Image (cartoon, rainbow, N blue to C red; front, side):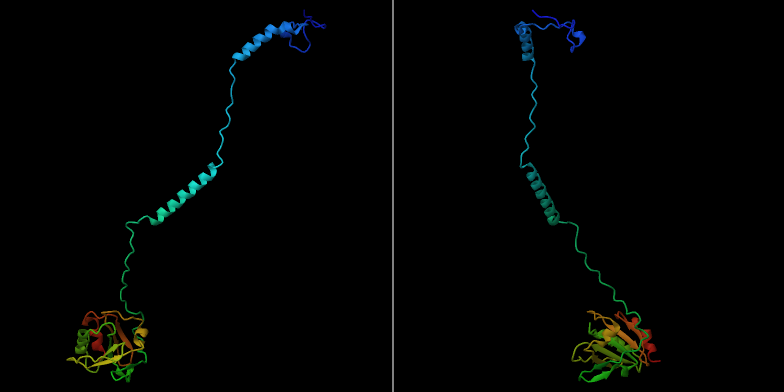
Amino acid sequence: MGKPDADGPGLPDLPPEWGRVVVPDDASALAAEAEQIRRELGHTPRRTVPWPPARSAFALPLLVLLVAVLTTLAGLAAVTWPRSGRSTPEPTPTPYAPPAGSAGRPLPALDLVDAGQSPVPLRGLVPAMIILVDGCPCPDAVATAAALAPAGVTVVTVTGARPVRATPPSAGAAVRPLADPAGGLRAFLHLPARPGAVTALLVDRSGVLVKVVPEIHSAEDYRADLTRLAA
């Protein structure tokens, strides 16, 4: 049989609301209470804590490899994808503009060559209409200029090749065919030869360049200035 605490109705370290606590002398007296507690604990479900999912050691390298492959494929597609609607624009031909500041300058002291390869001072032929036919022989244009040239004005044709090919005689003024193998006149004018184009220079008696016609289209391009050269 149990005995109460010698100091009073309850144990000193237990809450007073538990009431009187009796400690039995024989532990077997608590067998029934122990069995009841075991049964209650046996019916209580145990909560299992799931283990964290195991991460594969290859997950991160595979992800990096996949991103690299996708990036490479996207770059190749951007380079090789056909671009419809994009075409290389054709260059626009620049207009054949006359050189700035050529008129009013003295004719350079150039020696051209005739059909016999003899030097001919160009200034000794003024007043003159000098026609550069290195881009086009254009005999019709030369014949028109010779027919319109007043008396005392020399019509000179200049090619860039040797020997000088003789110009057929015309009904007007005589035409003096010369050659400029060194390209001095073209360099002075800063006008390159253009296929199918004839350039004309009108020079007065003092050797001053009156007018430059980069490309003769008709006689009206030079008629008035050619008439004034004889004055």
